[in-house]
Image 1 (cartoon, chains in turn green, orange):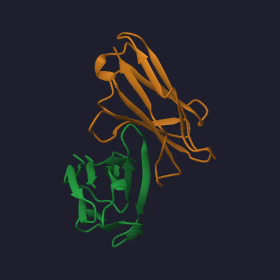
Image 2 (tube, one colour):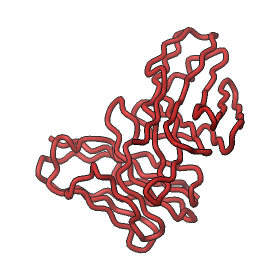
Image 3 (cartoon, each protein chain N blue to C red):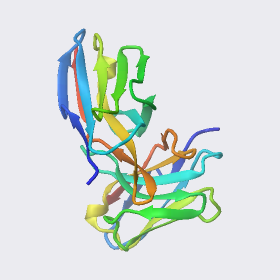
Length: 113
Length: 112
């Protein structure tokens, strides 16, 4: 069964601190996406990672992909309250003759002022 | 392009009624996906289309659910004889081939 697991599931952190969210997946894939979701809203694309070793940065967020370890990380630097949201990773996998996007369990981040 | 649009944004219905949601994808995108999301969970795959062909349907999807994309443009998702367990956010997304997924704002269903 294809699985995408994130940890932690919940993260409460102080403003100004650093932290990393991990996304592990069980199948071969070289495409991984990170999304942000605010309460009651839809998913907003953050990063597209298309190859082993890919690293993308936007503001206080940096994402990386290690396809050999089947692991992606989302690193938060000097967190601010506006980053409070739920973050999802999604893996593209070829299974049963089609490509599927499989989402992780999500990490709910709360940044405390 | 205005992105992926969904209608209605919120639907409240009584158990046993039928509901239909519409999704208009980004115009040049050939793939369209439906997901369901309940509180505190990640999006759960329901079905997807490449152009007008429905290529996969989740085994979790009961026969009460049907989706169409008649001309390879907009899509509809119909739920017949709704149950309280169908209450969720129904998300539509589109992509060009297996590129980045772009999501609509979602249609929230509440079954009383």
